[in-house]
Image (cartoon, rainbow over all chains, first blue to last red; front, side):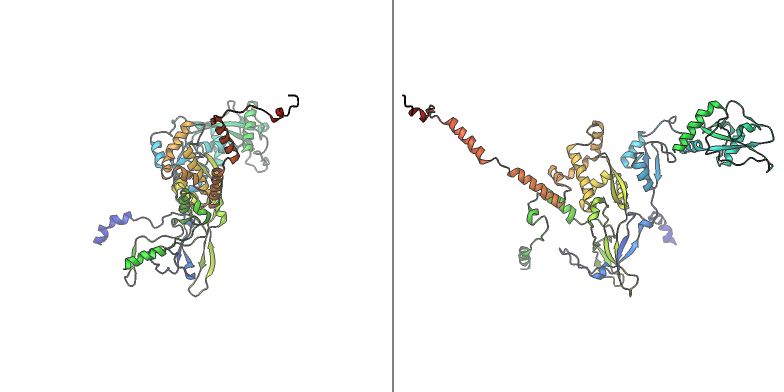
Length: 257
Length: 265
């Protein structure tokens, strides 16, 4: 027990047995070791047939890849800001970051440069978070169905949009970030059924995204309900004519992507 | 007596015939021979086995001290490997045996290849090649293709393609032909890699990375250039003109023998 305590610090230093050097390789071992050869002999070692029977000692190919560090040279969606040291899978790093020159290797030279703020950007130019631009793209593609009551009178308020977005798994934390069109929309008004309007959502008080909403009248009575339609593929009919251009351009962009 | 005997035996020693010390290969310049030895004769780093560390081991049962001899696993180098960057990998031919009393079954352990792209900073080009995962791994560990190729010995690169790229890299560094339009970038990249030039002379880079046949052709071209002499006709003509200029003999006037035949004179 004494010895164990004394040598405990050494135990902590012991490296893990899984060390990866050659990932795709197999490490072979001869089943029958070769007999001792003459010292400093110039001849090739004498190998018999039995010396070519190999056992696979380990196959690092099957092991999980260790992550590697790279320094980003520009903002990459979902990965990091410019000048950030990030740890990613080697295949992803090589194919997606290093080859297109979005990142450089975290070599000692480059790390030194990074410390001297050569790769840093100002905070104002940065997107608000690493996932912000991804979220922008996601929201732009959306067509949100806003279901309103067919019988009771209402006027659309930010919380209606928040609830509709929540149904599509987008959680808006504050109603302040939802910006409705200037003119109020109120109903029930069946002339508005299936027509679209645009609301703006602000992410992290920085990125402002237009989101397409589609109005739908819904009744608690089963018999009164309107039939379901594929409003998200139809060409949008705007409620406000001034939003027509914006709506069309948004749809065109999503079709391109 | 014994030492004399050993000396006698030395006289009997005939060096092994290789491509570069027999036949046409013997005439190749030392610069190429140095590269060839580095490529073909040097023992590559162990890839498929883990070498035992140390010089001596103890037998587990008897406790006898035995020297450690790491005998490498023989590798096969297929022709197709020369069109890719394999990072020292090759084909292992051998047997599998599932039990002591089962018959052994032949088996080839081959590397998994994949098509990928490599980027060279010195040449500023993307190249689409066949690579192995180990090659990509080594590129990543050396912080880039250029560092990996320039650091690694020819016997570990092995494939002609990687040696060709290395040759281009060395030539570009030697002649400073990188980034011709941008002198600032050129100096920056040159400073980054210039320490690799220390190991080579001008002529060695000229001959680096050539296959044996290419080296012979290059030698032939050089020989032809040297052997091209001016024809003797031109040489003799010059000599004659010189001679005539130097000679002080009065030049006879043009007296054609036809004059003598003039019947009216």
